[in-house]
Amino acid sequence: MLDVAATIDALAERPSETVLLSDYDGSLSPIVDRPDEAVPVPAALDAIAALVGRLGRVGIVSGRPVEFLAALVPVDGLLLVGLYGMESMIAGERIVDPRVVPFLDAVAHASDDADARLPGIIVERKAGVSVTLHWRVAPGREPEVLGLAAELAHRYGLSELRTRYAVELRPPVAIDKGTAMDAFVDGFSVASYAGDDTGDLAAFDALARAQADGRIARAVRIGVRSPEMPAALPAAVDCLVDGPTGLTDLLTGVVRAL
Image (tube, rainbow, N blue to C red; front, side, top):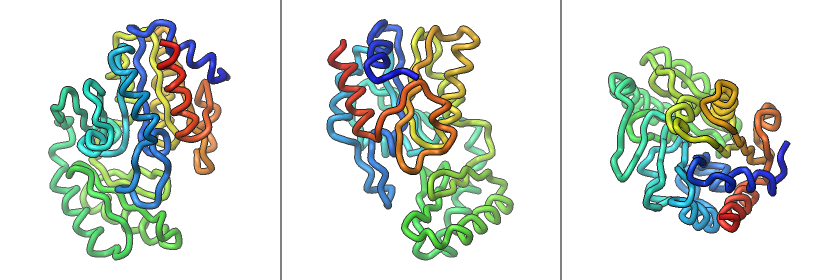
């Protein structure tokens, strides 16, 4: 396990050959009850802006829509990957993976049904590409939400993705944060990712495989500690930091090292 100082050194050693990617919720932004209230730590925003142009590539890989990320993290030159890799934004252009397009009507129908049948539950429509049902504000309704999610997934031919206090209905396409890593670390020697949740484990696994296969020289996997982090996370990373503040301090340290 690397300490923070060693992690900073690894990211600053070959800046032009280094890609640094991060999750958003719980990593750059504190965990909140309502998804639309999640805003980045101001100092994290400053650090990301300072790193763009100094490292080979800097980006955010999130379950959020890219337009949400672009509004909250308005940094020129920042790569944005949304919905676990189903869409991306490069130089202001939003690109949706063509494999998900045939399922957009199904997502819309499932979203409408969830709105009608789950009063009081947050139904987060994600750019028409997926929909997430949140029970954080009503923890006692978890079985009800999961039951309806399973029913809607079966009815409309969608897949389910369990996250923290939520379940997402999405096109049944093999896209996750791991496939995003494979696409966006290509051509770099050092590749890093920071994340805190179950969906981030695929990204950490992908970086480990890329290093083992020789596609990158070094993987730097940064886990963001929280009371809700999955039990498998500490064993999947090279460095652990304490919440978004800890990640912010690490990113600021990389800026200073450069």
